[in-house]
Length: 263
Image 1 (spheres, rainbow, N blue to C red):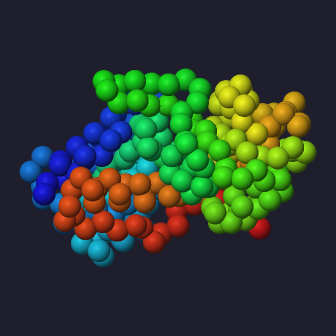
Image 2 (tube, rainbow, N blue to C red):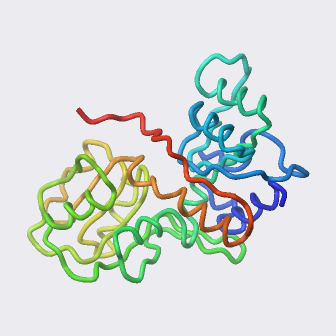
């Protein structure tokens, strides 16, 4: 099976037009047309360590969530981490493809995977929706817990499910948490939509300091870290490729690319 067929399968699930205007999802490095896929390494970020892992596994395709090339390169000299990754990928005939906000916004995409990990019932889009052809998309997902939980118990559950060291939260909600809104990554722009949708809690990866103000006892904010919120995206890639491209060897990276440490 060609690399192109694998990329097409991913893009059928999450068409590139679903991506936000600031994004650079899609092919980053390499050729896709005639090259046969020897294996796919699935990750959140592409680093030199991830490329080395792909080489050791015999994979000539890396599928990442975050684009390797978010900003244009005017030269490739090996200076800086992104340039070194590009050089190493090209030297080793490794194609790099990124599925970013198109995968965030896809039906069944990243936010649905987060909802699945939290055990939410009847996940659905909230806030602005996007339609590309016959593919429905949206920036956030909302659903219900099986049983109401206290805010403290809810935050403890989220910490356990996502393996986070700490959660940034506002004042603990005094009513039960039942309806939960989600936006992986930087989701502060959806906070008011979550409130309007009747959410008791809003889970996202990062927010600015001033976004926390004025929502005491209105909604439980739970900020778990950008990497932590999207860490299961590679599982989603694996599900899509194994379903649509049977026989392709898929590997979940064992490299933790989170640049943030908690001390």
